[in-house]
Each structure stands twice: as C-alpha cells, then as structure tokens.
Amino acid sequence: MDWAFVNRNWEKWASNSVASATGQPLKAALLINYDPTGPSRLLSTIAEEQGIEADPIEVGEFVNFVKRGNYQSESFFIQSNQYVTTSIHESWFCARCLNTSKPAGEGAIIYKTPSFLILALYDGSIGAASRAMAAVDRFAWQLERRNL
Image (tube, rainbow, N blue to C red; front, side, top):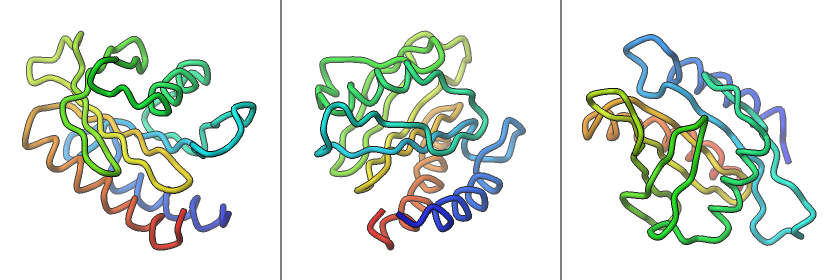
C-alpha cells in the first residue's frame, strides 16, 4: 500500500472538493480501509476524514452494512442521520437521508475500490448529487489507477 500516494491525493482532492462553505460539491468525506475478502478479525479503519469526525463504532456498523450487501432492504446511520439506498451500480451506490431538516435534502455516495470505501456526503437534490458523484469519481479514479 502506497500510503504517501493515498494521503497526497486525498489532501489535494479534499481541499478542492470538500468544505462546509458553499461552492464545494461535498460537505464531508471519509476514506475507510476496506478488504471484503479479509478475515473478520481485520477491522476496517478510518484512513482519512474531511468535514466530519466519524465515530469508529458507527463506521464499523457502516462497513458491516456494506459487507452484508442488503442495500435495498436495510438502512445505515452516519452521525445520527439515517440513510436509505436509492440507486445501486457496479462499484458505487447512492443514498438519501430520511431524517434531514434541510429543505433540499441530504445524500451520500458510497464508492468501493479494491482497498477502500469512499463515503461522501452532500446537501441538495439531483444537481448536487451529480456534482458530488463527479467529485467522488475523480478521487476513485486516482486510487483505481494504482489498484487501490
């Protein structure tokens, strides 16, 4: 694992894509070590985070949700917000927040690479989701180039 490469690319990507101020496509993002074929005693850890202070127990429950793969029949929680999956694709899926107080809503994009899960959160609806997906795709492409 080339941690220097991952960290350098995360820092560059996060500074351009994740912010609490308007204008950035994402409000928060997590990079989680993920090996679905590894032994169950091998815990996933938070590799990087921006715009969020994730609870390791909550992240563990989220990783278990991803491993189970029951995206359409289960929901997951991130920082007391409950998300339900709205669309599933080969290496990523989208979810919407059920208990948001924001008029335009909130969403999440989860992208699986060979070594990581990227969890990206955004505010808004369809246009915001498209911008968020484009931002996540740029970072995932960097990782997948190195088979990470």
